[in-house]
Each structure stands twice: as C-alpha cells, then as structure tokens.
Image 1: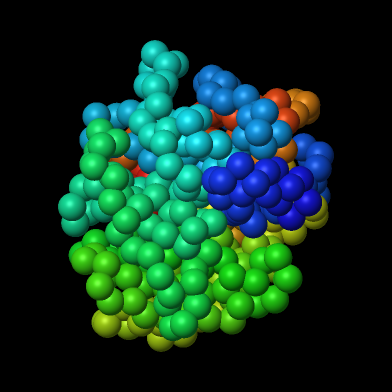
Image 2: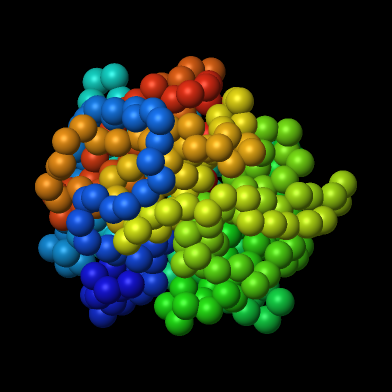
Length: 336
C-alpha cells in the first residue's frame, strides 16, 4: 500500500475517506512484463490533474463515455471540494468538474443499461452511489453489509438487465484471499456473493456474450475466468492468465468486440492485451521513459470505434493517453 495508503490516511484525517486502494502504489515507470510480439504506442492527449496538496498524489480511474461522446473520469484521491468526477471533451482537450462535493473515494464509474444513471464505487465507505447523467441528483444506491461484511467495492460490470457485479477487494491490506464478487440487483434490494476466496479482485468485465466474467486478482497478478449459469451465479472458475508484472500489479480490465482482454497495470504505465485463450497479443506502452508516470489503471474504447483512452497517473499528475485498440469498443470496454 505504502504511499497510496499514507495519502488516503490524510483524507481520513481531514474528515474525508481512508482508502486502502484500487491498487498498491509502486515505484518506477518500468517493470518486467510478458514480452509481446507487438508494441502499441500510446500518445498523450492531455493532462487532467496534479497531485493534491492534502493527499500528495492523484490517481485517475474509471474512464467511460456518455451518450454525447464526453469521457467521464474519476480521481480516486481527490479531497472534498476538488473534482472527483470529471467530464472531458477529448476533441477540444478541455474538461469540467461533474462532482466535487462529498467524501467519497471513487474508484470506478459506469452508466447503467437499466436507468442510464452514472454509478460510482465508493471504496472507502463501502457504498455504491448513483448520479443523473449531468452529475445532479446524487443518491446512495447501496450501503451496508453483504453476508455480514462491509464491501470494499472497486470496479463494476453490468449485465444486460442492469444488475451489478462488483469486485469486492477485501483482504488487500493483509494479503489474504478474502475478496469476493458481489451481485446486487438493479433495484439495490437483493445481494448475493457469487464468488469468494479471491486475491483482492480489482478489474471485472463480462465477456462478449455475457456468459462469464473476467476478473483480475491484484495480489496474485492473475486473470481468472468465472463462467455463469442461467441465473447469474458462478458455475465454475479457473485461472486464465498469469501476468508477469514484476513490481506492477493487475488493475482494471476491459474487453473489446473481438473478446480481447485489456489488462491495466498499476505500477507501470502500460497495458497488456490477451485474446480469450490467453495468448498475449500486444503491450500498450507510453513511448520512451516518462518520468513521474507510474500506473495505467484503466481504458475506455469509444463504442463503435477502435479509439481507446487510457488513464495514466503518477507524481507528475493524471493524464489521458490514446491508442488504436485491436477491435471496436463495446459496453465491456467502456467503464468499469
């Protein structure tokens, strides 16, 4: 946890939130990884944030496109009063704050296919918050215990009906495999633990056909596959890919229209791309060694196009980088 935990402990001391992380902070922009036959070079779009004086850092996450083509991004470590949810015009390279108030430490953002609202995971408070598309009308969608335990909600995947599947990253601080996948129905009334005993699950995404879930387990640097039955429960699970990240760790996951898996790396400003059979297809890299950028946490591929936007952060600030994805964007590659 190191620096990330210390920074977010300051948030707690100021009456905001303590966040144990959507990934542990690790040093250095370059870490050992699987060597790909193909390197995709990402290019800088713009700088969005600088490290906050109160927390000493910034961490961008959860990029997702709205219906107007704007890109929404959360800043996990933003203190109260600073922009926590940003709306970005990637063409004009401008942005405006969409949410500044409140004490949430939001690690992901996604639009529901059921009601069209924005859903945010509040990692530190164990809540799911929803907003109107324009950022107004904040509501607590879910708060409380699931099977007697408060969640550490990290990322969200919606099924076709609008039910939420959430990576519950319990056990990260102590390094124990206590993580869960929690399902919450679209009305927020029913919950179920569909998988447990996971090693700090972080990224979560349905496959192309919604027949299963890809899950990244951060403290084991692996991608697991959970096949689902007709009732949305886990029928089986297995380790699908072992990611050789070195000091970097597996963060969020996205899936494109061809079923390819984009695995973000926390601790290295890069992503690794696999096909559904585990073959390493490519590595997305920032050209050269960029000082002060240490993590690529997530990606959104604009629906119907191959234009991808990657959130990259570090001591130098929070940035958007773009690259050409291997296939077109779908819901599974837009938010998480």
